[in-house]
Length: 309
Image (cartoon, rainbow, N blue to C red; front, side, top):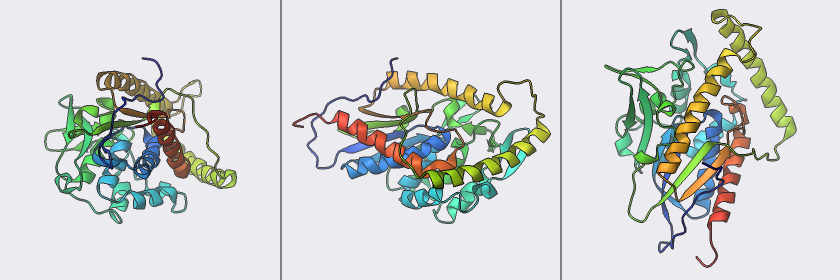
């Protein structure tokens, strides 16, 4: 499939606010761009009537469905100030390097947990059961338990154990869950894909502030790698490290699945963010990523709107 900056079908809208069914892809830190895309969609008069997401898309979509996305954005943009790596509960176990519970428990301090069926809009999160080799779709129960399962990147985050399943990141089976978002009559299907094979859009950001954040990030990452290599000794002859190999392998797999999903379920609006926008774990770039998502949505909507609609 050729690279698509934006895919859409022209429709005439009779409602003041067009209802949309929103699908948010996984993509690690790039998923922060979902926040900017959502804000731009709402700014231009679109109303989100349902949402489905995988991994980071499930997390951002969940905070929106809870009505707490603004609080979540503020927290993300301040991660460097509260020493983000203090929130990472390293385990270095055979099943994963990070538990992930500490981050979600911190988020719960300002975003209360709810059952999915009690949210203001229909919400879906996707995970994968590696015991039974099947997709797991969360449509009820604790939203944070659903998110915790959906974000469990294999070998990085420890999987979620249930009575008869072992759940990992939904991106390994369905990174853009278009087929699970709840549809309504005359709605508008919008997909935000943060893994697009397109050139990266560089936006102007404060160089001093970004340098400070990067310095903190690099320092903490060095501590992480020092501990990591105590368990997985580094081979200095390797040209591709263990951690990067995992990331690139999962990225290649999800990219091909994404292409198939987008071909099968053609969205009315496809908002693309380059997979080169940042690294999978570059959460220190939150403010920049929000703006990248906003710009991508604005550009796509400008291309979508025909004259005299």
